[in-house]
Length: 265
Image (cartoon, rainbow, N blue to C red; front, side, top):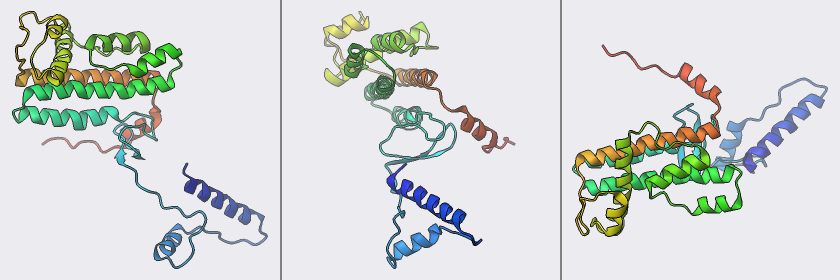
């Protein structure tokens, strides 16, 4: 709790103690409306327990249990059920924004690059939490703190071998090969101006591509890599919460009581 919240709890306990110790019946009230009005009007000195809660940077309702959260920064755990909000932000903001750019005509190379970069950042948040919360040797901790998720094969291997999280779950062999190629292309788009170098030709397996050739994406390839990284993000999220389970009770209550969609006529 905040210092202000602790002060209020102390005031509440003191009022309860006073009420229990008196020989005379009656009402003992902490009127927060009156306190707030007086403080706002500066008519009286603010009580010791008065505290005006400051809104933080990100206010949202949890997609899993609908609990209200107000956090500093962008990413965090729901205070109601413990669900991380990274996947919802990734899907609702980054995926939606990139898909809109694709549908508007690109440039498709930039969209594909940003799709892979968004996943790189996404998985990094989860690994940061895993490093903080999972006991591990100092060597392994130091290794994970320095790792970057630019290579599909290393991401898949490390997440599976270290945390038993299958990033590529439900991806076909063709999808995996395509993702591998697009992760390498992301590096070319970022650091080589889109022109293939020897490292790209060797690492990607695209032997038909010549060194110095400008790489190009289509609306189809841009949409495809966006869909693949979304699947991978879902796998990371579900694997993370297998290690750190959410509290199912508020989620079940929300599922029971949330408004049901009206049937289409």
